[in-house]
Image (cartoon, rainbow, N blue to C red; front, side):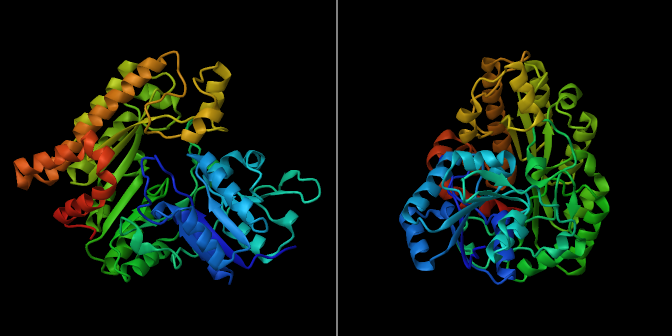
Length: 482
C-alpha cells in the first residue's frame, strides 16, 4: 500500500457567507494537523479564508510538493469546494486528495460520486484514519475511510471507526503551521467534548460526531488553556455541543483555572448551551473565572413547538436560565428556529416576546436547513413540503438567508419570509440596545456608533474591515479577554 509522506491541509474559503473571512483557526483541521505531527508525518497548511487565491495555492503546492492533499468541507458552498478539488486534480494528476468534515460525514459515498476528483473520504473522527492512510495501512482495513477501488472504480466504505472514548489521549492542536497572527480574532477554539446524545429532529451534529458523548478530563482542558495562556492568549471559545452536560466537570475546570491563577480571561460558549444543564450556582462559578459570553439554543418560544422538535426541554427552564445569566451580567445570545413543524405565526410571536424580555446581547432567528438523514428531512420529504430540491438548496445552506426551503401546514412560504424578515428587524434592535449599553458612557456618540454598527450600509460595505476593531474596543470597555 502506498505511503504518504507530505500532506498539505487546506481550509477552503467561503465567499458570500456570513463569515467571509477566517476569524480564528479551525479546531477540526487543528486536530488533524496535530495527529500528523505526532506521528512524524510532514505537513503544511494554507487557509484560503485568509484571502489567499488560486495562484497562492499553486505556489504552496509547488514549493511544498505534497503527495496527499487534505481538504475539510462544509456543506455550505460545497460546489465551490468540488471545483477547487477539480482544479487541483487537473493540474496535479499524481497528487491524491482526501476530504473530511461535516459534509462527507453526513452524505458519505454520495460525495465521492458527485466529485470524481476526491480519492478518499474520512468520516466522523479523522485523526486515526488519516494517520493510517499516510502510514500505508492496507486500504481495506482502515475504518472510517471511503475510497475508490483501483480495479473497477467502485466506491467502497470500510464502515465506521469506533469512537475514541479516551479523548485525553488525543493531542490538542498546537497549530504550528497555521498563520495565527493573520486571523482577525486572537482567540483559540477549545473542544472539551465530542458527541450529542439528544434527538432533536433538525440537527445533523450526531451524524457528524456521533450520539455517544465523550468528554476530556478537567485537567486536560485546563492544561490546554495554560498552553495558550503562556503564549499570550486570553480569549477562548468552547465549541462543544454539550459543554455543561456534566456540571461537576465544569466546576472542576473552573477550579483548575483558579488554581493556576489565570487572569483577565474571556471565556465563551458560543455554540449554544442547553438551558437545562446550567443553574445559578454554576453560572456564578463560570462567571467568576471569566465566562462572559454564553449562547442558549432556545429554538422556540413555547412547549408545543419544542415538543415537535424533540428538544427535550421546558420553556420555563429555558427562561429561568436566560434570566439568571442576564442577572449575573453575562452577555447572552439566543438562537431560535423559524417555521418549525407545528409552529404558527402566533407561536413565532412567543419567540419574539421571549427574545425581547431580557437584556441579551444578540438573538438569531434561523432559517431551518433540512439536512439529509435527519428526521426533519425525512418528514418534509414524506409529506412533499419541500419548496426546493436538496441539490438546489444544500450548496447555499445558510441559516441566515431569508429563503425558505420548505413549508408546513401551519406556515406558508410567504408567512415564513415575513417571520424571518421581522426576526431580523428585532435582532437589529436588540443588538443596537446591547451596544448602546456598552457605550453608554459616550452618550449621543455611543448611540450613533451603535446605530451605524447595525445599519445595512455598515454591514454591506464596512463590516469586514471594521468589525475586528470595534469588537476590540468593546471588549476593552468590558475589561475582559484582551
